[in-house]
Amino acid sequence: MKRISLFVLLLVAMPLMAQDAEKGKALSGTCMACHGMDGNSVNPIWPSIAGQHAQYIERHLKLFKSGERESANMAPMVATLSDQDMKDLAAFYAGQTMKLKAADPEQVELGRQIYQGGIKDRNVPACMACHGPTGQGNPLSGYPKVANQHAAYAVNELKLFRDGRTVGNKDDVNGKIMAEVTQYLSDEEIAAVASYMQGLKKNQ
Figure 1: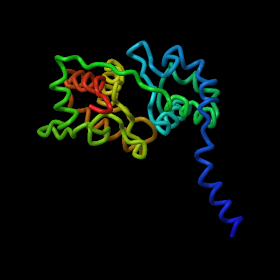
Figure 2 (figure 1 turned 180 degrees about the vertical axis):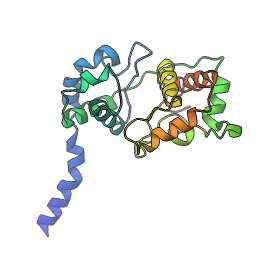
Figure 3 (figure 1 turned 60 degrees about the horizontal axis):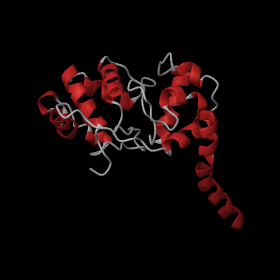
């Protein structure tokens, strides 16, 4: 009975032991040029990954390595990473703090309307249905945090989804949802919702 109990405890503890943020920090040197020392990128066309869900980061590192998510910039960066390296990097960046940003005041109202209420006459659901009212996402469902993400990066990603890109294989449910949602959005609406997300705060 004691052996069984010990085995169960080890199984429960294993996921907690699987990631090592300190090792991730040591591996992050090559990431800093684009994503910043703490995951807050300086260039708005590159994503800030500080505080992003570890599961999301790990999954996308694997997709970049396999080529299922195409990126000329990321492919060589992840080529030599092991699965453990990816877990450790994900743990490191998930533990960092995203810097607060502000939305463009002129785009707030339109962005808020789309993010909170969607566009009913075009069957566009509210963004917060998946990403949460304050943009914190849902790690269990694979929905990333979008609060305080650079608007320029978000605009580019939303347009890629609108063009029909999915991330991962043909069974990528979340990617299909994004492709379906964004196909009804204009450039102006994408810019507005991206700006609104950039200004979202956890406790607003």
